[in-house]
Structures are given as C-alpha cells and as structure tokens.
Length: 70
Image (cartoon, rainbow, N blue to C red; front, top):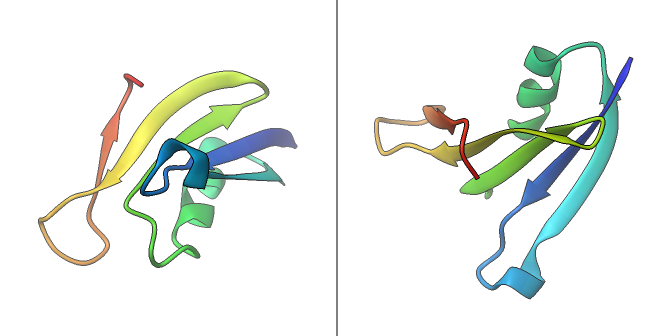
C-alpha cells in the first residue's frame, strides 16, 4: 500500500483541504477523488512526491483533465 494525499483547492488558498489515505496504486487514488462531488481541482501526492494536478474538464460529467505540472 502507498500513502496518498489529495490536496483539494478551495475558493481561497486557506480554504483548501488535505485528505490522506492509502491505496494500492495511483488508479485507486484517482478513483477516490470521485467521492468528492464538488471538487473542481486537486493535486495528487504519493508518499510525499507530487504526481499530478487534476481538474474538472468542461467536456461533460465525470471528465477530468490530468496535468503533470503543479
């Protein structure tokens, strides 16, 4: 198991939330994001290392854009 963090952006920097959890792999960690219905943007970290930024895409429900940059 790996340790993951979802750093969920808020309206203001101080509004952000950090969710820590374990998952077997990155796919499972990204799936965890789907439980947060109101999230528009988040960063995924694995064992203290930045993985990617995830943002809702206007392409339709359940469509996300993944960016390897912060």
